[in-house]
Length: 305
Image (cartoon, rainbow, N blue to C red; front, side, top):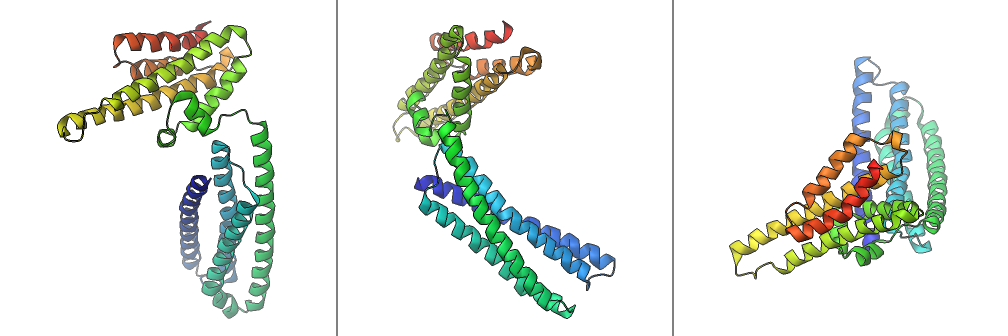
């Protein structure tokens, strides 16, 4: 749970920085536009600036919620009451900070134009509206996560680790969690047809065999004192990992095409995707390659039936 919260916090910080930069760019354009039209000291310019900050205030909770939802659904991790309160507090603090910085920088401009009191009232209205919107979005996020997780047939990352023998770090680094989750979800739908059971099981077995080959390569890495030999084996391990990513992402694409009606499938892309799968297993010993190829090709052949 702590790792998930840390991952979310990192993504949120990146997004906040991006949103603040976007607002700065908008403000720059506003200043240029009104300066060129000799309206730098006008209420029209100040209203445009205010609107830009309102947009920032709407975007901050919206994007934080999107990040929370995406990552928590990916890892099937709910929000408990403690985390809900913490999220609410953090978002309100971010909103207050934005409003304080805005007030400090621009209140004097509104006052000089004779609208200081109007500005103060508007700030409080914005603060109240922002707080209510954040509270509503947090409540909606919790309800949505609970509903989607209860209805979700997706595997958790731990279940994927156990099924395929891929460690959690590799699942994350190669971005395999989402594709493997969707592969299993789609295959569960396709598996309602008895004739598909053996074919789809063969795909899972092909992936597992590929992972096992990678483990054998890792176990064969020479000891640390054999520097040159070790470097060569490490490069082989890295290439094996990249090929595993290519294999799973390609199977993921084929799985998504498999649920489409035949007249809506992209046959050219399907053929190219199958070629990538063949290329990803090409360098393995003949016996292992043939075993994986035969299991995976049964699935590919279903597109021609």
